[in-house]
Length: 456
Image (cartoon, rainbow, N blue to C red; front, top):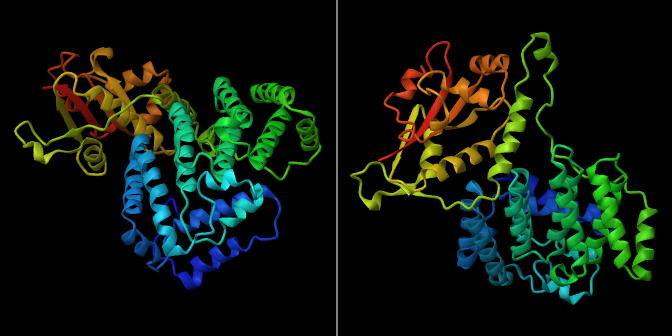
């Protein structure tokens, strides 16, 4: 509900009973269950009910207004700088909102709850249940998860290390869970899975940077033990090596604690593996003798996102024509997304050399692959100078470069739609109308929309 921006829930019938149920977890001592409840409770707070308490707080606290608006804007394109600014604004604004909610006792958000050291992890988590207050760690975790799932690993680590709530135990717990899930997921490459284990070790060992959170450190041990019990894969080797490193640094008291952890049963603490697209054709597809294209598209998606994951990108502005005034400028990405949702077929992007047309094309390709769903429109980034005679059969030529088979190409032509991101029209010395010569959207031909860039 939080993800799909559900609004207007009846507080009496649904919102308040759910919140009350989650907030009444008072007798549970299992940190895993308490964290899941706290996470669900925060998600519920991001689903507005039909009251105006939070709206009243927004009116009283301008910083929070700015922060929420900044987050909403940044999440659309995962602009990390904008996202971080939004988190900081909320972090600052929450202190001003505390009087509205009468939360002087709350020590759940930020480093204060850690430096006090009076409460253990479970009790600290429980303090956040029942407090009707949106906390920074929840949107920060969602942003981190989004970056991680889209393959932007460098941006993920930057967010984790620089988030204003990075010392919050709930944030650290959630980050460790995400890292454990990456390490356990065989669809990631061995280097990435090993890096996830190394990051877990860094959080465990570096007390100066991450503080000495007993509950979080035990959760890291649980994750490493679970990974070490897997079946001889890269994650098992990396986890075993990390456990040996941790034990070599530990004093006698900590070593005894590690051995006690090894004796516990952690089968009730699952590491969630993000569901991937179908790895093989369905029974219906096999019966109809249709070639499998989705698994190839899944691999292509991962390659594209990994390739562009750490690129620095500044969203450009544009205007409708060369003669248009500078005051009429708009966000180019927003305008292209509007085009993709319209009935229009071709979007022409003109610009001087060095104005960022190619950078924008790569960013658009990344965004579309990030949003790709099974059987959805397929982004296809085409460098026109690299295609021989792109005026004819351009899509098939690009798919062959991407190692699709001829049966797969025929399947895609008949059953799928494309978003063509064509870069370098002028560099390919074209004089043809590529949309027309490729007979796009004609009966029996490729179904596609085209974004094409060219120098002015």
